[in-house]
Image 1 (cartoon, one colour):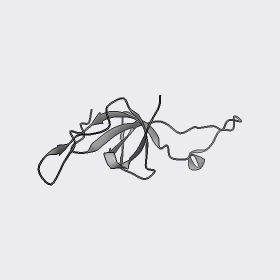
Image 2 (spheres, one colour; image 1 turned 30 degrees about the vertical axis):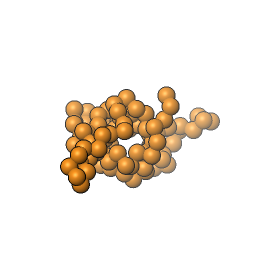
Image 3 (cartoon, helix red, strand yellow; image 1 turned 180 degrees about the vertical axis):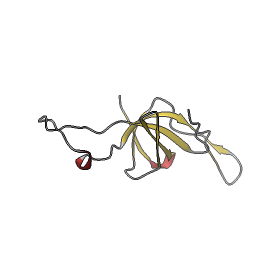
Length: 95
């Protein structure tokens, strides 16, 4: 498993819906990129200018909403992950 550094967050991306509520299947080109996921790992936090470490607000297990074009896409064992900076996480979702 990847271990994020500094203020980075590793997210397992939740797959976008493949069909509409009416039951119509959408081709890959018509599907929107998912912006939801589950935090798998977080880095130790960013180091401030004075040398102190700023702790992370997120923790493993959080379900989050993140910026649409943020981070780096990673695919491993047919699973999609995203490595992003904590500042690109927009909200923590209620389960």
